[in-house]
Amino acid sequence: MYSNEQIGNNPDYVLAVSQALAGRQEGYNFLYQSTYQKKFFIAKKYMGNDSDAQDVLQDAYVQAFSKLDTLKEPDKFPGWLGMIVANTAKNALQKKKMVFFSDLDGVNDEGETMEMQWEDTDVSRQPEIAYTEKETQEMVRTMIDALPEDQRMCILMFHLEGASIREIAQAMECSENTVKSRLNYGRKGIKKQSEELQKRGYKLYSMAPLPLLLFLLESEENAFLASGRLVIPPINTVLERLQNLPKAAESMETASAGKKFLNSMAGKITMAAAGVAVIGGIGLGIVGVVLGQTSPDKATIVPTQQREATATPTATVEPTKTPEPTATPVPLADKWKKAYKKFLSRQITMDDMWNEGQKVHITDYDYLLHDMNEDNIPELIIYLHYGDSRYDEMYRFYSYSEEKGVYLLDELAGISVQNGLYYRPGKPGVIVETGDDYYGDTGAMYDGHLYNYTIINGKMKCKEKAYKCAAGSEVDHRKYWPKGMKALPEMKSRKDLSGLEEAYEKYKQK
Image (cartoon, rainbow, N blue to C red; front, side, top):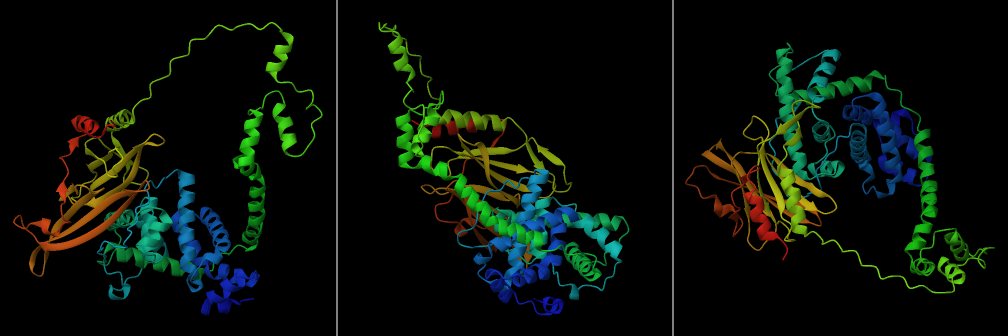
């Protein structure tokens, strides 16, 4: 067994993982005891209360212990567990509050990342600050709890847990672009809340909002860990659930045996011979034969048609029935046209990033249709402005299928008003170009970004490229663009359906 001193001073996660994999309880005990308090603190920040945080942690430990053999670097168990806690919390929030994170996977295949500018978060270089425990808790609650769940989780995972953009995207099941977008929105929300704190008389020591929040979180965590107020629940429940997992899996396998049989060729042949007979108990007789049982009534079972023939020796000729007319199938192009037309007749409702639980309703937005994956079903691309900043611009990409109807593929938010939509003839996808002017050491500069969006296996993929050049109308940005890049047609107001009609004529199936 591990002592408390070993847990606090020299956590040997490699040894503990190997012991747990060997079925030794001391390994599980160490992994549980050495991480519980810190993970409880972050889980409570995700969920907002003790009870939900405890439920999330128990589920997370069961998942982690059941997948322990997949952990490639045992010494990094705490960070790996942290991603499982975050994913479990996300699922719990979805179930509890129906807060759906609607982004689909859109990871960058080449691992490129957009450069992000953050404030200096090293507290040692900040002015000496001091708050009471009550003030700290109040300020943290004001700055972080006011954020929407997805932004709050991204901020905490990135800055408190030290997770990478890619790790957060995997845990949140969204694209890396979306993570960056949520981090940027979260920073804006934190800044707004810090301004509210100043109005209420709190002294912020001229610290930037994000470093201040991180200092407060670290102070609150240290006070929480030092207080000893948290009583770590026994590990018994987790281990009991873990032991029951193989039994549950075995039960599921047994229950699915019938489905496996029906999907086998023998099953299909048997059911075909039976004529899918499930009426009047005939199906039970067939099942008995299949399972090797004898049916006492099998010799007396007579098909309905045979009984009727025996009772009526004189055959009667039934009049020929006029076949019912078959419905003419609706062309797929007519379906997506109707669905997109209905979509454009409505306003877009979004979460208000400044007011949790509130919605904003956007009635004015532009659109165009472009077939991004060359399947004759054009994607609907929406461009809208949703805030007061010049960076509150967004592209949303929708597609259509007969199963889902109109559905969201991905979104690119937080872009500048200086942007455009492009394509390359003969190549799938679209390219968003955006950027802004800034002043550098050599004068006015332009910071440009290219986002190349494609659809692969029904999901959006994005590759990014950044470039810098001199600012000014005389500068030709096209030399930084991919060869052959051309502007897509001008977008239409959602009330102007001529763009929809043009796309219908262009892409309708022949």
